[in-house]
Length: 442
Ligand SMILES: O=C[C@H](O)[C@H](O)COP(=O)(O)O
Ligand SMILES: C=C(OP(=O)(O)O)C(=O)O
Ligand SMILES: [Mn+2]
Image (cartoon, rainbow, N blue to C red; front, side, top):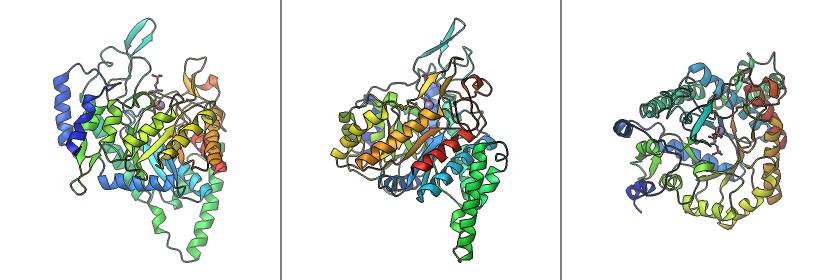
């Protein structure tokens, strides 16, 4: 198939979880504007991420993918983005130090604006409205007008993503992300948090090592900038399609909405439009694998999405739940091995461990999250494959959405600061707690 044939082929397949836009003319206008707009990421940066993920598959690096479940337009502020970036970088430092390997940093950022939902409607006090589908589609407010899908939001998503990428790139470049900033990142945080105190100790150890290396004459300038990649669920195929570009240098087709796109658990049908679209692009692709995934499906994902067995192209993101990971994962790893491919394996220990607290809040226990990661490591080590990384939902704010952690959040505390637009996120302190616990496995 040629590039252009591949580009249209997804339209022939059933596309689930697509909004029912009432104003088709407005949708057409927005898609035309997006098609003419500059891509948000470059093919060469997508290729860099692919080569980093290949190193992860080979056990030479560890991947950290994380950020909000659902980004919001209101959340696109310099402070909120800095805090999320800082949390990502702090977790990454903990893993780097523990594993003595590079950590590939991938935000669930700059594009994570659309959500597949369990139910198309939401009922409160006897009133039923269309469910919130992410800021890319409709409004979070429980109000009939807000919940109407509005195509103008797709343009706002593009601009919000661009703004976020700019701010993150600034932090990654300007020395803010440098290892000599470890204490500065922690300043606001160390005094009142057990995770902060633990982190400060690590920062002193790293400082000491840096001073030693400096005294030996090692040039440390390279440590002042880092690479941070952007990823999101490639859910809204009209949006993705409008931002798909052919790279004039290689002739290959890329999604330019983010470096890496993943296919969600709800849209991973082998004969569905999401798999067909992702097949047509050259970016690194993730596929979420839930507990019902079969070995045959895994073989088919490799055959369809990675026919050339290209290292770094395909990442399986497993989200089985703590109770099922040890039973389900081995058969899937063996199935992938049978294909002769070498996918990257990442654990999403969040989405299989969600439950409703008595207060009605969707939540997750840090203990379950850690248990799933442990199961993921145990299975890979038993089979001689690489537990490549983790995929988590977190924020840089002091929210109370998940239960547990050093600054123990209880089920009764959830209402204090529950701000997620969709799934419960780890707060900054819980993110570092989790990172330290995972570091022990590394
Ligand atoms: O983030 C994942 C899904 O979109 C989310 O878990 C769905 O949530 P829901 O079950 O509240 O619709
Ligand atoms: C929708 C999500 O997860 P999954 O597809 O694994 O349910 C998500 O990552 O927010
Ligand atoms: Mn989620």
